Amino acid sequence: MIFADLHIHSRFSRATSKDITLENLEKWARVKGIDILGTGDFSHPEWLKELKKNLTEKNGILYSKSGFKFILSGELSFVFSQGGKGRRVHLVILAPSFEVVDKINSYLDTKGRRDYDGRPIFNISCEDFVRDMRKISEKIEIIPAHIWTPWFGILGSKSGFDSLKEAFGEQAKNIHAIETGISSTPEMNLRISELHKKTIVSFSDMHSFWPWRIGREMTIFNKADSYDNIIDEIKNNSIIGTVEVNPAYGIYHYDGHRDCNFSCSPEETKKLKGICPVCNKPLTIGVDYRVQELADANPVKSKLVYEILPLHEVIALVINSAMESKKVWDEYTKLIEAFKTEMNILLNVPIDELKKVTSEKIALMIIRNRESKIKVKPGYDGVYGKAMLDEKQEKLF
Image (cartoon, rainbow, N blue to C red; front, side, top):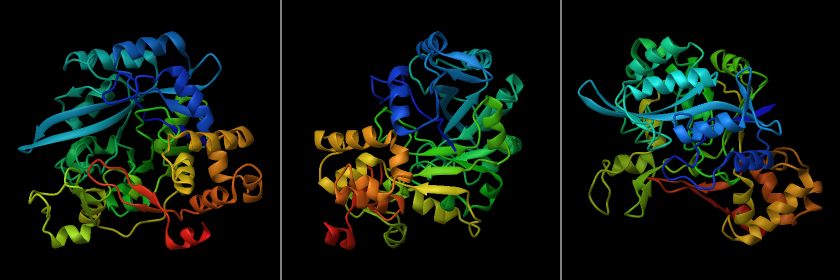
């Protein structure tokens, strides 16, 4: 199985760690157990220079000096009007070569600036963008990013679109995949009949390289020896599956208002008629509500799905400490030294082996995580969900 995180950001994107370098990305991808990373932000001139200087291209795969694999990727923001409504959408773009990226960037230069942010904004409709990209190269792959998030997800509550067909028009046939985003799972997406025809992928959209961000969601491929391998699996829906977090962990799963410290379920939102009881203004409608609103089918069986929380989150829950604390890092480091990668620990290592390295409580919680049995208080309006001990777990501790 090839674990791939193809939607990430560089330090040149807004609200990202200034320590994101190729070296740090490779280091922590290896610790996490990631086999191939997207480069992120290929539209940014400075980041692209670093990519060209430090990575060697072969068959559409970029190799570091030590042989780690990258694929050219980026995310663009589109703000435009369609049908008398303002629209805001994020799209992930995968490209087969530096030559094609240069052509994409030359095209973007005719539409606006791209030097001020790793995820620049353009006034281009989704349909026009896909059509124009296909004129450059039919090997360019475009994936709607985190499709349910309120503000920039193509089916989000604020985007204004209710279907891919509405968003992409005649070019919808050239959209082969959608990204779940942290706040939804494949099962949730498969409640939409239109998405039955699409490959469902997951990536982290990370803004820092720490292991509770990078690779927190991934897509599992059969092969990654060439760009064509990866794109063929996306186009033909022949991926193995995905790695997901509990959707409640996502920052837009429930409805609510961050400033009002208020959140609620879709059922409660309906009772409140969408109005916040604290400030009497419309609630930010989250992913769970929006999926229910557009659902028109019973979900079909999805691909393999691992629903797991990052290892730092698991350790922090047991020892009641912040994820970035020294206590959590000490436990994490012991486990990595013993079992090599986080994904190996989360998915494979038997409990008896875990107990030889860490406490019984942490070992038990790793297994509960593997079984998707950790309860999460849902996130909302930009606030992450929080892992919690349920009554059964509290008795164990």
